Length: 322
Image (cartoon, rainbow, N blue to C red; front, side, top):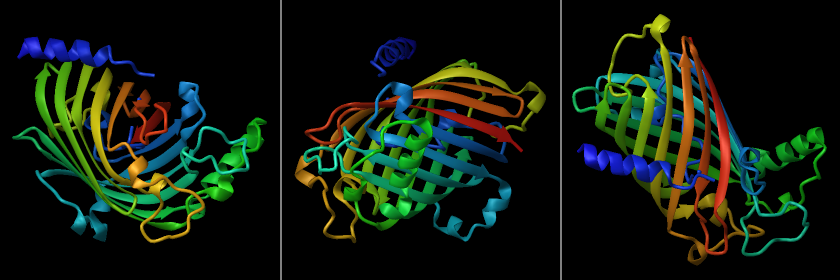
């Protein structure tokens, strides 16, 4: 067992990390906070990876509290285990092609697209089997209603950058209704200093249909996300790095191919242009001290369509236990 763990450690940490088909992931096991009541802000930007194309920006604000157990949508969320956290997350992000300087459609490039949604989620932990089941229901809109273009234009005006062109060709308004299941299982944990667990994710709906599978490795000082222990804030200090390589299988992506219900989009990619298999890697640093949660990470994603390119971006998270 230790021999295979050493091989995996060496392999995972020497994978190039210039980082995800999963853009914003609040519920990964390595992002577990030491309590059942907290708020957390997440911000992504490809500026952190010195690029300026494809997934250009995203942010979310999440709230987890026992009071959200009364959310009627929870009846649609699967559960496994007795320890349960309930949450809501507001999420917004945008995509651009490789250039925002042209007023013409850039064929064989990524379409302009924006998405805005509200996520209801439940995290349930089975402490006996060391597993976590996460169920997420996302509702919202893709298209101009998500105001991603207007936001990018406003940010560029604040920063003095060139005015982005081409948003008139973005994917048209359509409904976002997606269901996601994540299953995480602990494989190995040595004194909360080295831990390995498997990751499986499946997403079905109008935004995307895809699956991902891989591993998460953590090194440092941390609490296990697979146990249900009382929170001791005075002793809550965690410091660790993580690496998460994932293989993705993509059947459909509305930000590339257009929504299921809208027609006559100015420009989209066809199914034959899609890469059905992708590789992503997330690598980051987390610090938790008393009530504060801080995280910085980098993400890498291989090209999602045949004429595309690999892409990188970075992100930060700031959370606070209530």
